[in-house]
Image (cartoon, helix red, strand yellow):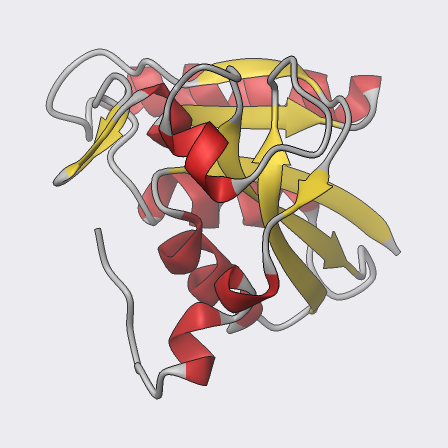
Length: 156
């Protein structure tokens, strides 16, 4: 199994999309990219910790490739919106790919270049690509939020 971590707005939506993907073994909503250890949702939303809402995806590379996960990432949000997705505004909602390996970083950069060349977005892509750091699992009520609330979709 391998891990991939993506921030694409509210983690409820992102988690739901990846959880429904064949080859994804598990997902966890959480926080990454900030300075505070074990932040709370309220602290992350205050935009004082530097964290993004992210989803850690554990996947079986024999069933789905990292490149396929990147395609899902690009399709599930608007990577041209700086520090927001729809009505959710703030740096905690930024578009970001946290890479666990050098290979992931290379694939993410190549994928971003392909997205820019495709012309399929309304403006310049603002997605950050960086190395992963400490992952802090979000509170239990954020885990599988859409499924727990009987939502068939959770869009931005």
